[in-house]
Image (cartoon, rainbow, N blue to C red; front, side):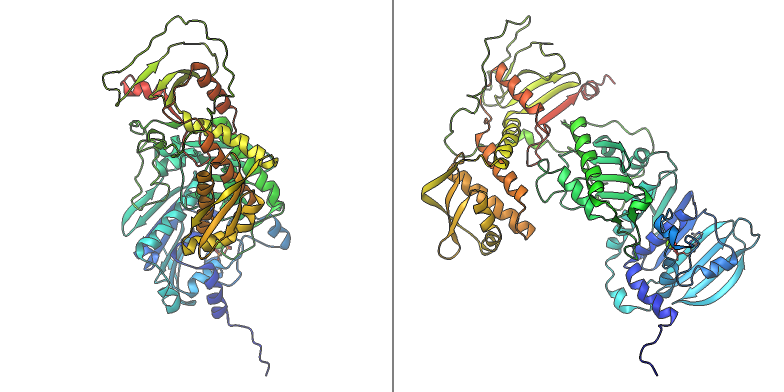
Length: 612
Ligand code: ADP
Ligand code: MG
């Protein structure tokens, strides 16, 4: 007898379930996809105990005839694919015919369904892959699938399921994904009898995001709208929004929710020099790619795709985000009380990564003291700035000084309205640290230190890339004592440090010495720089990219040379700084993500005065 045998179907299904069904939310995903493929316009999901006890999905889709209701649980049985050509351009979410048999092999399933043309509905009961009962049923239409006791026959799997709240989180995250991708479908999610998501049918992604996350959230995002061969639509967060994980990135390709490295990398790169490394923006991106350009048959769970031309996808996403950030110039706004949203919004009661996002709830960091390095200052960084002839006296010129409390506040305002049409016009300085300015949309506060830092950062980055940095050999090397973890991280970046102009030497134990560094840096800046590079390598557990090195060096040079707070500036210098800032690639945030400009729009002002 031959040693090799064909597996019985039930066993094959259970093996397939290992890949398709990772946790309750994977069941929800497959069933939601089936309902969407059946053209449902209303979908209701109920779960109990994080989906471990019960998952019930009811849709108003096309339903199934008796024969199909049984066929659906056969291995590789699908109504969505007939031949190999169709595999090349799949327009449905499902196509593998694997989900229902896999799920049914590891749970207790009840299916209730009726096709429109039929008078009688069908009920099918299956347990661990065995059909127990098929019966007639009076059923209004559409399909309901009830999945009980997931993994009841696979204890090893059951053991790995997490707490109810963790599984609930994954489920609500998933329903949120599909709700975003399908605004014209209404979704309801109930957990243990409580409604956690409830959306009505709407027309656009914006409306749907509004239903799910509320007005504040959507108002604080930047819209993306690029329609070329690869179209990119959606919303991205402003650079102030910094998240520790990619949890609030919602990515879709042709309506399919995906986890994709090409897109994820394009997003990270588009936010380079805008967000600190290791932090991520929130995004909702809908890509539309010609179906022959994308292979969805990469993994049984279908959350991975393969692009025929990954570079084109990368470019499309990268450019769309850069353009949106550059044109929207999303200045951080002052924290103001928002008016109540006009449409009813259900609060998500399961904490959702996006629902948590509330921008600017606390005073933005720009209000905190920008700590100048504890070093004697080098030359005035503005020395190189042209100082034009004193300006013509203005019509209204006024100086306000709250001299009674000099330590508390001092404001000098110089009114020269409409001198710079179309440009940001500085009025004066607040505490010799923040420039007060106006533009067509309202009032602006500009942090002079980070503004100048941004300008210098881009200049220095250019110089570093052109290898124009001058180096300085230290007479007495600067020493640094590292922790064991830092010493390990240092080993990762030692040779790259040297390649980027920072020569180091290992002394005894965990002490290192810096022998040479870019000459514009003071020794203590060089020390700080090396430490911050070590910290990044430690955090990322790997060596850094050339760009990371260049960016950190440029940031360090910029921070050191930038104009400090508590420095009086003439009007000309303020104008120069503002113009130079606006000419940078990203005038809204410093290289580490801190806001540079706070805006108080006319709307905010009118609201504040209760005029609207
Ligand atoms: P696939 O979605 O890859 O075709 P599934 O195992 O998920 O495979 O489903 C098998 C078949 O069952 C589908 O092709 C479809 O014809 C039918 N089906 C599943 N769920 C539904 C539903 N909610 N409404 C109508 N038909 C469904
Ligand atoms: Mg399916």
